[in-house]
Image 1 (tube, rainbow, N blue to C red):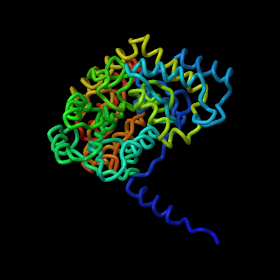
Image 2: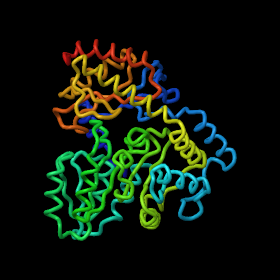
Image 3: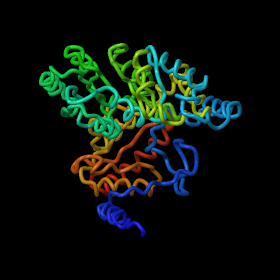
Length: 392
């Protein structure tokens, strides 16, 4: 008997009718400031490649050399026979980079969150306290637990303290927040969160995937606030500013040992290919030794955001290289995004249900590799398309 999968088509058609389906464009060259997408040259403003390290010669050469020496893969999960000297070297360097005792590398930032969070709490006697705008991977990780849950309004420290007070008798308390919020580009007040955590005896868990290479001279939000040793779990990503692929858990030696022994997404995933591990190490070295990449990123960020605002665009809460152009209605965001793509500017419309119905936006992301001419060309397109859409 043939299984009826018509419900899949019906569900997809429902999405498509609302303009909420995904139809990803095809990248036909390296992810660079100017690249080929669907056969057209575009200026890339939708990549997480903040420091333009995906094509850095040292990163590429490290990947090629390691692949030639070790092969394309390790042949095992790390827990059994897949841990290579390259993995350990990269983890030691990553801990040094973060200013902590130890680190552990996962297959992705997503698997770090969904694999680690469920190991940190047990049942209803424990509580997870989460910012309402946390990333979906955090939400998925929390759903895999049996702990009590509380959500506080975005970056509202008075509300966080009230929740902590209400759950003062919980056995384990875990506060979870993004470091840089990926839709708005604003920053968590991690210094205040750390103070409250210490006052109420809570663990702190920050997902800093969009803060690495951006904040704290590139070391991330913990460095930005000078909180080394005061944040229990720092989650990071190699697939954004570091330009490679993979997730990071950084903290004490106890944190590494716990994650290694209890996190199923680490225990049961194939290890990072040798070329990837070597590229990860090289990317950290470049970031530590070549601070001009971070400086250029912020120069571009400050210029572009300032010019957008001077044109009359609303950039929302942005404090980082994630710069949204607020549109309100989803249809308006899609109209602006489509018009910009026709002009050769690769941006994405962020619409409901990714954001609330009245908070649709076109999200732009800066890169250290964008030239002043690139930014001016994009700004001219934004001005034309924004006027046509009635946004300015």
